[in-house]
Length: 114
Image 1: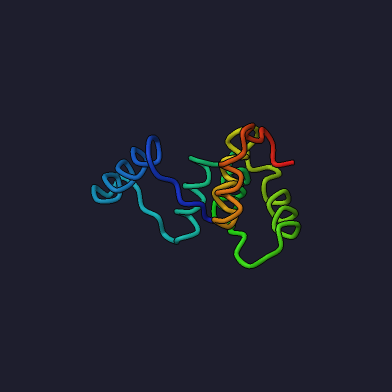
Image 2: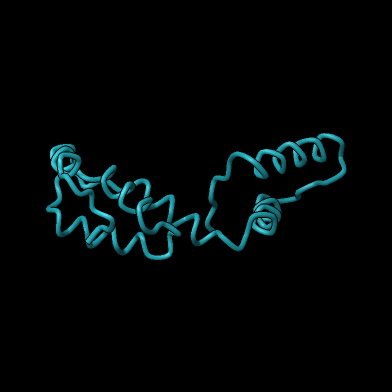
């Protein structure tokens, strides 16, 4: 089972509720698997998209050629929920600094990663 770290909003409320219910003895998880199933039940449905988005945010071009990086970026971006300007912003954040500076200097900012 994949575990996705959730924070903010409903995740924080859920965490506080689970802590309170655990401490009061209202609920008990016999195993970590049981806890994870509860977590997945509460926040499931978008799991694959969340995992892809997290994977996308961790990408970096590093020493790779741009073509190689673009192919990996496109693969990971599929199903991440990113598109349009947010996808371009993420792409620019992950490429090497010198290339990023050149893109920023362009008069017409690209609207897609193409």
